[in-house]
Picture 1: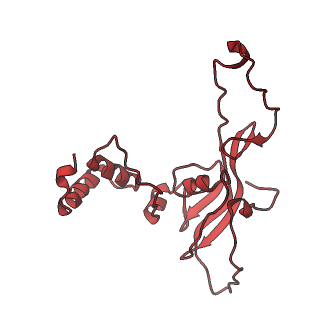
Picture 2: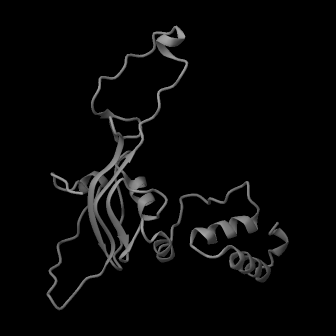
Picture 3: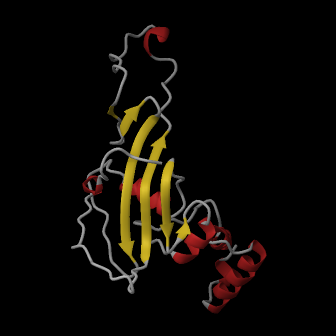
Length: 193
């Protein structure tokens, strides 16, 4: 996918460190690589039962064309553009913060890098593993610390552990046995079910 304009690193609050010169004999392994990363979410469907059809005048309609969507992305005929041609490299071992205003694409970028969101275009890799083609390999290389604990309250402890193990590509039978063993060692086996 080609893009006519320069990358919009500033949209995500990216501040690059000074450029490093690398000799032909030295190579810097990129931990994270993104090239032309793009994500377009489907446009929200109009609500039914409101407006002229329901006997109400309703709010004025927006003119066709691009407008700011409630999420901060750009609303187009194709949908809500959350990322548009993001190019970014983070070297192996480097610390990196993703900062920006609401709607800048931070959550979408992290969602793509953690394999929870499929990109609409471009390429992203973690340690040379493509986030789409090698999702399980990517999940084995990363660790994600959410803002809040996120167990599924509809699942018991053992089901939560096996669900998360499956996310990382572990076979279900082995995950269950391993989870039971760990819970036993921690003295929590009675809470597994």
